[in-house]
Image (cartoon, rainbow, N blue to C red):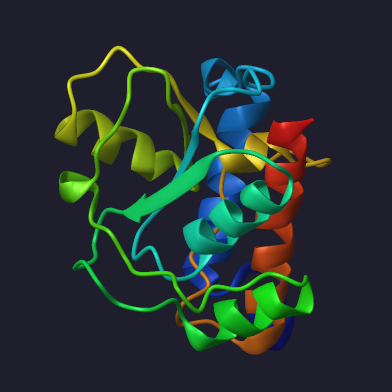
Length: 178
C-alpha cells in the first residue's frame, strides 16, 4: 500500500493534500484560479518551491511550444542548477535544462502582463504575501485533463513519482498553451 501511495502521490502527506485540494476544487474553491488560455503575447511565469524540478520543466516546455516563459521559486537561493532528474526528464522530451539557474521570487522581475502559474494552492497565499499585485494567479493542475489544483513537489520523492509529477507539469503547460 505504501509503495502505491509513494509512486502515485509522492508521500502520505502528498496523498492527504491531493485529496484535500481535490475536495476543495469540487466545491469550487479554486474556480477563480483557472482563467482560460492566456494571449499568445503574454509571458508565462511558472513558480514552485525550489525552482529546480517543476517550474524549470514548465518553462522549458512552454518555450518549446513557442511561448515566452520564465520561472522562479519561493524557497531557493539564486544561481543553482535544476535537479538532475528534471534535467533527465527534460532531455527525454528533447529539451535542455543545462543552462537553468534558480531564481528566488523576491529577485524576479514581474511584468504587469505576466500570466502567473503556481503549482500548489499554498503558493497562492505565498505569492500574495510577497506581492500586493492585482494580477491573477492560476493553478497549473487546473489545466490538466483530469484537473486537480495540487501538483506535489517531487524533490524528495521516488523516481516513479518524480516522472509522474513532471508529466502532469507538461500536461498542465499544454493545457495552458492550448
